[in-house]
Length: 257
Length: 263
Image (tube, rainbow over all chains, first blue to last red; front, side, top):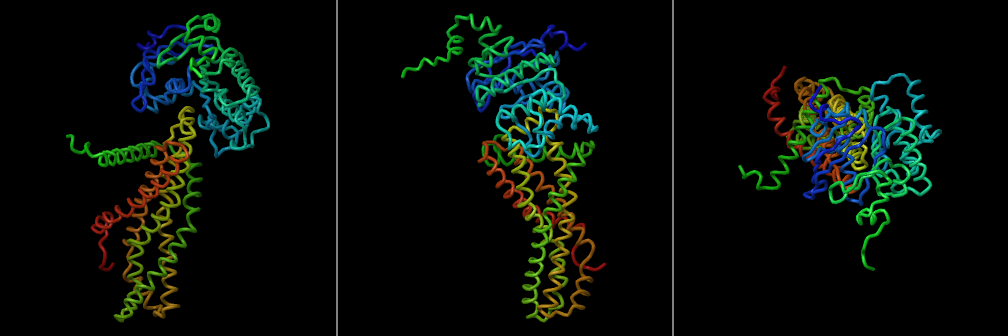
């Protein structure tokens, strides 16, 4: 058993310790500590530009921290090389803010991409899995469309279908409802819930959308000034009397008109 | 040790060169490790090799034609019009063919590579590749590099062939050079080593275009403005590098394949 396994407490899929990051000379993360329990949806709240997305990108190795530790299922990933990260990334799916669909491919090819890249050659298996994945995100019949012809919500759903097709144990969502109308946002929220209950995945959702948070969260954390200010259940969040939290929930800026 | 770092231009040049060398190293490591997606290589050969033919053929035809005319005007005054064939042929093989093909391909293919990869970078598609456990160098750079290394020598050969055909036509049909003299002298003074030199240069220029173009694309930032800038820089840097490296290639290759003589 490796040393890293000894340190990993049971029940947490992701453990982050003292994570620090600086971008263009500005300290974005100043020692973030966060545990993300297996099979639950953790919502990370915070103001725009507060480093939430930067934090999320560290969890899949898209950014390398200045210092600190990130453990996924007990494995330390903070200092791994690009190729060493590939096995870790196969366990994690990520939904990017604008979908990040490959614009030279159709929806079908986008969703089938992870399967083909992992060596699946049987067209029948690929077709079946793509159909199932698109059905989960309610996007049947759109296979032949190019990403440029999809609406924002459809792009996100197609991207989600691509992220879940290889059955990851964890899905990272970067602002899943940003820029969507309330109805589409609700569809996405239900989808996140459904994926968690049907596939039993661990989800990490970065957002500043309180409606979405109330709908999907098992646990909530608040990132403020580069540190985790609060972690707790949804109930504890709403029961809190901390002015920072109440201001965030109720959307008060304290600016004088 | 502070000296080179106190000049920002020197520093950024060294940094850039280092990045291109690292990308080249990573690409060849992947190629030798067999991480080649052949389907993408074929797509790129069609895109780069097949798609560049019109540009390269037109360049070849008109360069051959105009060069023949100029050489004829000068040589005819000295009563040496039968030397037009070999002069045109050697100049095309050793210099004009590979350099002009290199420049045309840098403009067409280098720009496209940089723009496509750059757009993928700013729209997070490269991050999406990485998040899906696909290495962007393996997926984007390796197929383009292999396709360029295959296509470029062929395009150089094609350019020279059409240039010489145009040269023959202009010399014999328009300028009334004796066709037997033209062909005989051309054949006598042009050696296979001249052709080897052309193809070797083509191969080196392929590497310059592909690695500068891909490096520019992979380091694009700042949205649409950034894509525009990196595309322009890809063309400018690869064109200038081709012209500069060409001088050193000529001096170096001339030791291995000396000009003149006959066999």
